[in-house]
Amino acid sequence: METKGERTRQLIIEKSLQLFSVKGYHSTSISNILDATGLTKGGLYGHFESKEAIWYAIYDEAVRRWRRVVFDGVHDITDPLRRIEKVIENDLMNYLGKDIFEGGCFFLNALVELSGQSLEMSRHMLRGFIGFSKLLQQWLVQAESQGQIQSGLNHREIANFIFISLNGAAALYAVTRDDSVLKQTTSQLHRYVRQLEA
Image 1 (spheres, rainbow, N blue to C red):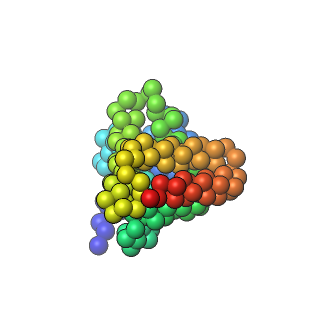
Image 2 (cartoon, helix red, strand yellow; image 1 turned 90 degrees about the vertical axis):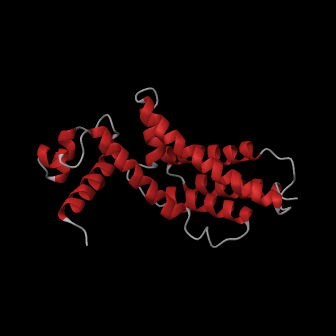
Image 3 (cartoon, rainbow, N blue to C red; image 1 turned 135 degrees about the vertical axis):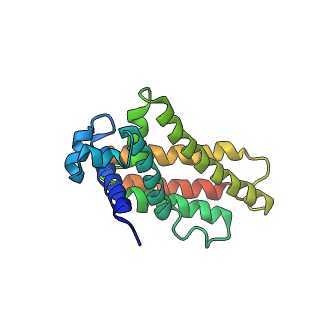
């Protein structure tokens, strides 16, 4: 059973996630968080020592939400190429297309805002991006070992291309809110993955 302290901590994360998603990290003040949560400074600082500490907790929560959507149904798929296609579809259509976070893609927005502003926070996000690319690389290695894709392909470049395409679509969709951006990117990336087949 959740304690009062755990509920308060989750309230801070929820409200701050909304604020950071819409206003950005730097434009959100501690006063904004206090107003949104109804807490006193003492109540807030009893759970988090700084706004930066809140951001790290929010980042972890955002990753959990992203994973829940993007990896939905993926682990049941034994074919590594179909796994990649499912992740692409989930990311574009079910994560971006369903506006999981107010203000668009939390990760893209935060990375753009924090680049050049907070080296450590940017690096923290970059590690997450690299981890996702490495997972795609592992699935490509598995596909090659099973004879599904051409041998000798550069798995890292392929994984990074997919990742870059997903983020490019996220940026364009944030500006246009045009569903065709997501549909076309999904279709083209699926075609790209199938062109890798042996």
